[in-house]
Length: 231
Ligand code: DC
Image 1 (cartoon, rainbow, N blue to C red):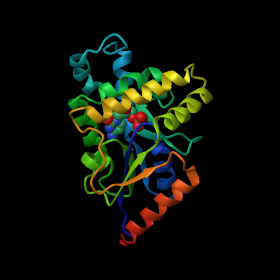
Image 2: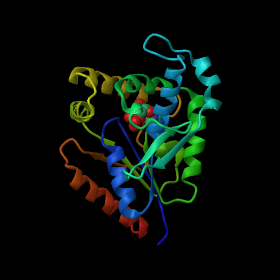
Image 3: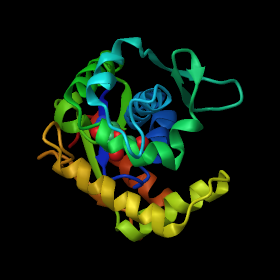
Image 4: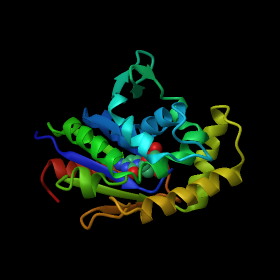
């Protein structure tokens, strides 16, 4: 059966990556977490001292883009492809709050987006890919056969992200996480280049009151229908 391209966009912490990965595993497709790429660029610029909570040197950040090589690799112990920055596994570090606090600003920079979108398009060339992000259905793969737009209340999203961070031993408060979720929503939806918007042909799913299993089955059925050419 022919393979399709699946784009999963939406607000931060709506569980896009979780469902995208489940779907890719079930279908035997490649899963790409595009947000991880923006996070890795952010981490690199932080390490170089180009950005921090008090500094934002856009020019320096743009100048160092050519030094950044990104790839996804599967570790033996994990079923998920993890993010590598210049050959180093940074999967854990890119999820820290320090990175979350700066990543949305980095994602407003057009030269960063051009570099990452090009790489994302190459990864999806042969179809059979499930990619999650903010602009996948609108910019990266406007011709994707299935587009999902995920949403949930800010409170539910912050609660889920908070639980995750605490489980990983991160030292954060719920209020900090909620503020970060709101701040990122604002930056992601109001930036000039490729803002987060629902593509006209995307199907919106609000999972505030949905469990992971129900959500997966709804999206899997949509994918099966698209693969069979039924919808
Ligand atoms: O999905 P995430 O929370 O890991 O994404 C981190 C940030 O990266 C998010 O605030 C916006 C940005 N992003 C983007 O602009 N475009 C994408 N395709 C994916 C993420």
